[in-house]
Length: 76
Image (tube, rainbow, N blue to C red; front, side, top):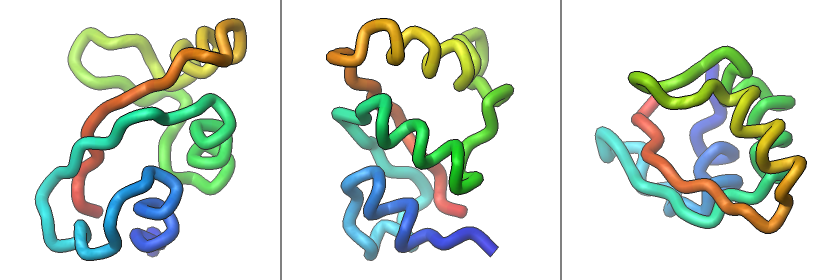
């Protein structure tokens, strides 16, 4: 079972967002992305539509650590 409370904390989302279908997040650092991957919240091969994979985002963010990511996470 996915720990939604932990995932929300990492993404800076309120814990009541469990009841929301999707929630936008902003300012995701490479360090937090690595934690999300390590804790199984996101798969390295995952992508949305024609976007780069998580692994490609991770490689880019490691090369340019000042870059922050944003996106939408779905209710789990």
